[in-house]
Image (tube, rainbow, N blue to C red; front, side, top):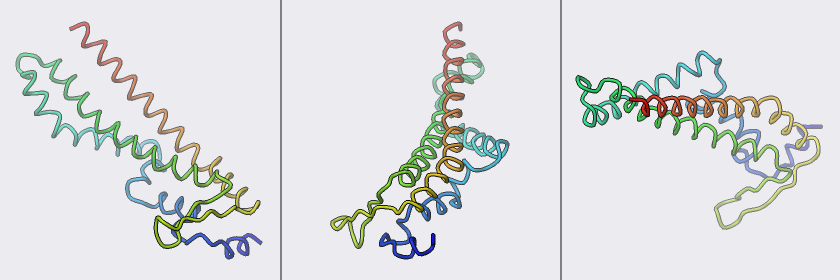
Length: 166
């Protein structure tokens, strides 16, 4: 019964919300959010570490490490964290887009270009399936990303407080 509903779906295969979800789940970057917590934080740690290649020299130009080591470390860590925030923001935006497409009772799609968009109303069984995927698969990913934002905000706040006392 499910296949018959999907088979009459006029939405092109690559624009169907379920296929967008599967594609996102298997993509190199967006799959980071689906990894185990240790692997996820390792990936973000790599982003932060490689970001020091940009933020480290800028921090060193502002605060000589030999004279102002703590300021250099705080400035470099804050600068490197900006790249991490951007990576987490991109993850969040991608996953929230797919969540919105899955949750919506209608699907907007393009047949051949931006000028001929159409709307398809999902049958009840497709809508139920998509909302179950949102509840049990996508929402936990988004909650993890929001918690990551909170952790990064806490780190920035602690860095600012430490900077204030220097």
